[in-house]
Image (cartoon, rainbow, N blue to C red; front, side, top):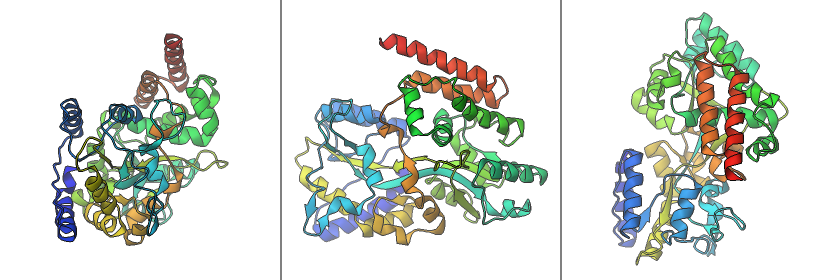
Length: 396
C-alpha cells in the first residue's frame, strides 16, 4: 500500500491530534518484499503492533496458531453505539474470520479489521463504444450481447478486450465467474471435492468461451503473456475498449489517464437462470499483534481507521472502495458502480472446499494454451482431470 502513504500520514496526524497517540506507518513494496519482511519479523518476534498478512487462509491460520494475531471478536461486539461490526460490510469480514469446525483448526473468531473492499469486474471505454455505434450507457449484460459488442468494435477497427492473462490468477477469477454461472455453486464445489469431473460438459463450455473469444479475435494479441499493469496501460491509453480488472484500477487509471471516460459492468452472463458471481470482498485488512504490549491501543486505532469519516477520506484519497457502509454516499460515480455489486462477491479464501493448487495451475495454463490456439477445450479438460486424479491418488 505504498501508494497510500500520503493519505496514511495525514490520518496519523489527525489521530494524534484527537487522542495524543502517535502512529507511525512503515510501508513496503513490492508485495513480495513486504510478505518476506512480515514472515521474518514473526520468526524474530519483532512484528509491529499492527500488520497485514498477504496470502491465503492457510497463511493467516498459520500466524494465528503461532500466537501472532489477536482475536478481535470481543472488540467488535456491542458498544455504547450498538454493534460496531454492523457498520462494516459483512463481506469484508469473510476473509478474516474462522468459523467453528474450520479445516485449519483455528479457534473461531475474527482476526482482522478490513480497511477497504474490492470487486473484480469488466470496465469499458464509453468513447470507443460510441465510436463503434454502441450505446455508451448500455454495456453488455449477456454473453450474446458481449459478442455482438465485440464484433461491432472490431468492425470499427477497435480491439475489444484486454486483460493481464499472463497472471494466471486472473484467468482463475474470470473462469470461475462463468463456471458458477453455468453450473451453479454446488456443482462447482463438487468438482473440487472430486464428485464431478472436469470433462463434464459444463466445464468444457467454460473453456469454450475462451476459444470463442480467440476464434473471433476478441482479445488483444499477446494478452496471454501480459501482466496486468501492461493491460491497464493498454486500456487507459484507448488501445482496447474493454478490460477485466478490479476496483483498484480506478486509482491506477486516474494516474495513467485522468480524462478516461469509462464505466464498469459485471462479467456477461452465460446462463440467465443464475446471477453471476464475482471475486471480491475485503481488499486490505490489518491484524493486531497478539504479543504487543499496546494491543488495546492498536485495536482502538484500527476501529477508528474504519469509522465512516476516515473511510470516506481514504476512498476519496486512494480511490478504493470503503469497508464502512456509511461511506458509500461519498463515492465517485465509477467507484459506486463497483460498489453496487458487493453483494455478488465471493472469495476463493472462503470457499467451503479448496482445489489443489496444482490442479488450478493446470486449469489456468490450459486456458492460456487455448488462447494461443495450441489446444482445444476438450484436450484441456482431459488434462486437468488427469491432474485432478493424480492429486486425489496422492492424498489417499
